[in-house]
Length: 352
Image 1 (cartoon, rainbow, N blue to C red):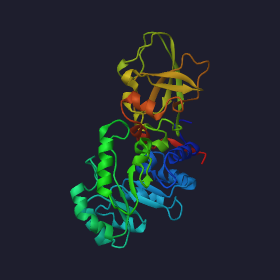
Image 2 (image 1 turned 135 degrees about the vertical axis):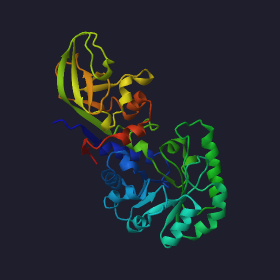
Image 3 (image 1 turned 30 degrees about the vertical axis):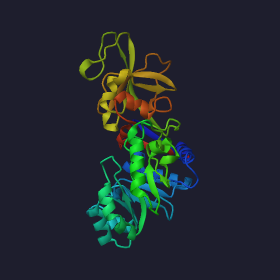
C-alpha cells in the first residue's frame, strides 16, 4: 500500500473541546469553528463528533462550507457564517437555514431585503480592520439591526495568542463600548481569547485551532497522526548525494528510505531546510529518523541507518512531533499545516 494515512482521533478532539469548555462559566456557550473543511480534517465528520459531544452552534467561513455539515449535525444546531451574506449566498442561507454574520451596511441591506424574516448576526470591527462594522457604522445601523431577528453580536481578537499584548485590552474595551446594552448574546473569543480569562468570554466562545491540537492551547491533546508508507530502501555510500540539488551528502554508509508524501500532500518543501535551527524527523516505532535531502512533490527521503529493521511506514505527525512542531520547522503556524494536508491521504477516524 503506497497511500499515506491521516488518522483523526475524535476522542482527543472531544477532550480538547471539553477542556476549553471547562475554562469558562456554565452560562457561557462553547461552540466550534469548523471552517476550511474542519481545519483539513473533514468538516462533516468533525461536526458530527462534536455535535454528539454537545456542540449546538458551529462557525464556517463561507456559506458553501455549510453544505456537507448541515446533514451531519444534530437537529436544531446552528451554523453561522463569518463572511456574512454575500452576493449569491441567499439560496444557501435560506435552504440550509444559516445564520450570516453581517459585516457591513450593504450586507444588512441585502439580508433584510432578500430574507426579511430570517435570523442573522452582526460582526463588529473592534480594531483588527479585517471584517465587521466599525464603530461609526455600527452606531448608525444598530437600531435597525436590533429591530430584526438579531441572534448574535461578535468581534475577533487580533493578538489573543500573545496574552500581554496591549491590543487585547484595547479591543476588549472597544467591544464593551460598542455592545453596551445589547440584549442578544455577545462573542469575542476564539481559542486564544478563551485562555485570556473570563473578562473575554461574554456569552459565547468559539474555539477553533485548540480543538485540533494547536497553539496557543498548550494543554491540547494531539488529534492528527500522519503515517507515510515506505516505498523503497537503498544503500548509499559515503560521499553519495540524495535528492534534488545534491544538498545532502552521506557522511557514512547509510540506509535511505523513500516514503510516499511530499509538498503536494501539504508537507511544505521548506521543512526540509531545517529553519529556526530545528531538524525534521519522522518516527518509526517511536524512534526519530532524520529527513535528508529536499522534500519533493510526492516523496521524502529518510535516514534509517540506525534502525534495527527496515520500517514499513513512518510517522511525520504524532504525539512526538505535533502540528506546531512541524510549523516551527517550516517557519509558519499550525493552522497552515493542518489546512494544507492534501486529498491524497487515506483518512481514518478513530474514537468519538
